[in-house]
Length: 156
Image (tube, rainbow, N blue to C red):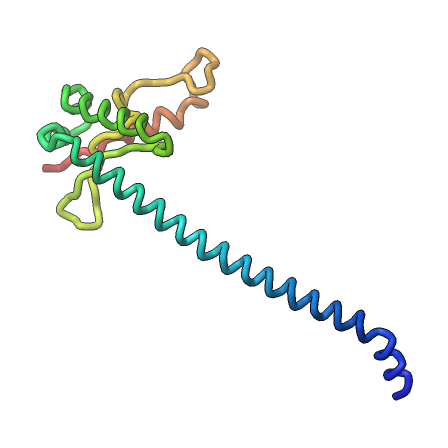
């Protein structure tokens, strides 16, 4: 018992300091984590609202008559399709944070939307030499598949 009292008397200030340091570190870590999580959700909500605002403004600029002319894959040759794609390209160029721009329309199924156009599909059947080796081959397949899947045919 005396040994413990001697030891505690000798190390009390160091042990107290270590315990205080652990409490402060734990508190700081907890508060940092809390602020990080709150900030992450706040930024996500801000980004969602900003994106919604941009989409709302952009949607007002599209002519519904152009959109209603696009229903099957061969419609990419129509002037209305080119107009829509150029509008999407312009919208994306005006907003440097926008990487992709699409137009979808609802179908009779509320869980399904139909693709109309995107900013990268002026000619959905164009082939590209992605690896710039001078040959269109299997290494360029990803781009070819993406372009061939660009349209959904409307069964109506």
